Image 1 (cartoon, rainbow, N blue to C red):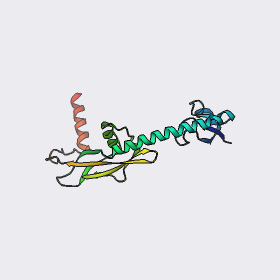
Image 2: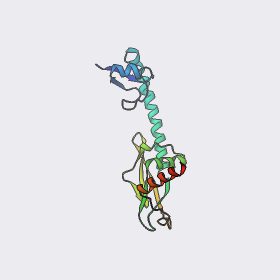
Image 3: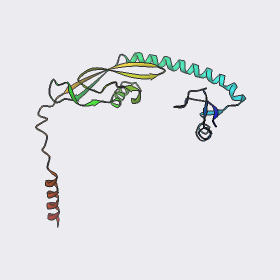
Image 4: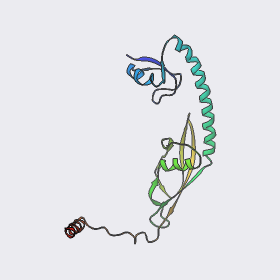
Length: 181
């Protein structure tokens, strides 16, 4: 037994503003109604449905235009990253660039993009120039160029200290306890 409700705003996984949807009574009673996200279907609410649909169409048109304008500005952006590489001239890097790093770099340039909206088709762990797709909503996508440079550290291998065995660690702990007593 489902209950018909009219959504007052977008609800993730359910629908957008002015959608007529069927939901379980407990979901409507305990979540949608108290949070003012939906209204029960009645004769009065059906009249409000047309006003909600008109307001939704205006809002979506404005948001689509804003997303397309943002896509145009994003297409001109080039992000530069630098990662450690094993040796000079090697294409393989230590680590990779993540969606979180790309989102924070875009935020520094004035673009608020969530990391889940960034689509990495492959791992960015090679030196060079890569293209990353950013989803801006309403089927609007933009491509951002990401340039990755490698930096090698001379003498990095020499600075690595040999690791002690566990047996040696436990013996030093015992001897330090004996000295305290």
